[in-house]
Length: 414
Image (cartoon, rainbow, N blue to C red; front, side, top):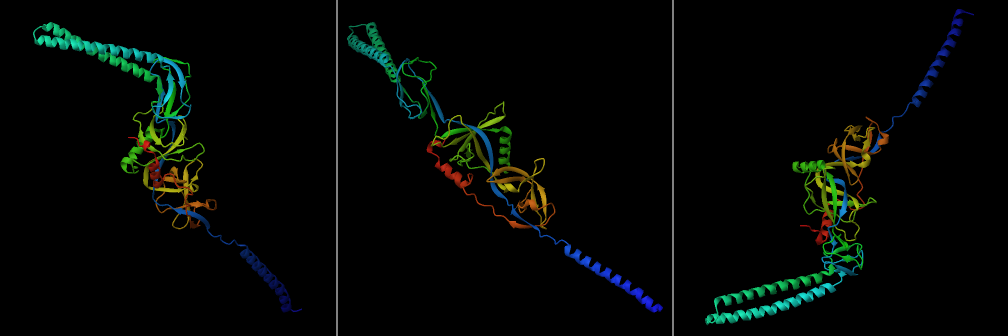
């Protein structure tokens, strides 16, 4: 075998091996290219673009219900209670007879006073005739001046006695009228504290019953002096706008979380702070036509104390919390990449958090889809429409005006 043929035999296997390696490498590259991950599209999130809007400044404060008027029924004369004329727990009107005290002693006293008056009137007639007679005799110079002066003084004394007898008679009549114990005010009367057969003494502290006027009714709420002073500073600086004086600016939160049906009006704040708590009492007037509010009842009042005309608010689900409890939101930048923005939150108004600091008008805040994003990731944004409340908002101006107009005339306190 020649050397050329030998070289040919040696080269052919080597070329075949090289070709096989190239084919294997090409197949591996194709597999690697086929296994390379396809880039995922940006996550889709729902956002809201925040805008400045007028939002009421609300505070939820504790309070106690108090009657508009309260009166304790007491007797002005001594005597034995012979009859109770009212139904316990019923409505009574001013002047209604509630108890009757035995009138017999007072009738006898009145008869005696009338008899004494008749006696003094007869004496006055006699004294007057005597004075007239002596006046005529004095003009004829048949009686002395001293005699006339004595008769004239007797007439004056008789007139004074008649006046005293009339006063005694009137007092006896008054005491007889007082045997009918009447309601001093209109309202709902409580339980009877005395029964028939009880002896009542004049000037004693015995209370026969209690009447309370409950429609309208007061709610006394408390607020710290610091909050009240900050509110006044914000109103003075213009950060908050004042409410009109005739605006119904308070609602009650009942035990089940629902709102009381009628709005109330803040009348005034006390000028003295409680030294033990550092709180000031605010008095609110509420209609109570169905007696749903009872004196002594504990309630929570939601008070609208001003309007923040350029406030920013976001839905509640947009607020995230850090491990230490601080609030933050996801904000979409101009390049559609998200970042976390710390914010300072205020109260919740109409299911939205009021943002005190950290956002500005035009910022895009992520509301839904936060579980799919991380800091710096790109997103596809979909503007979210905040659903209108199914029920009327309790602090809309229209509703406040209607509630104020619906209050009874007796609710207008001067």
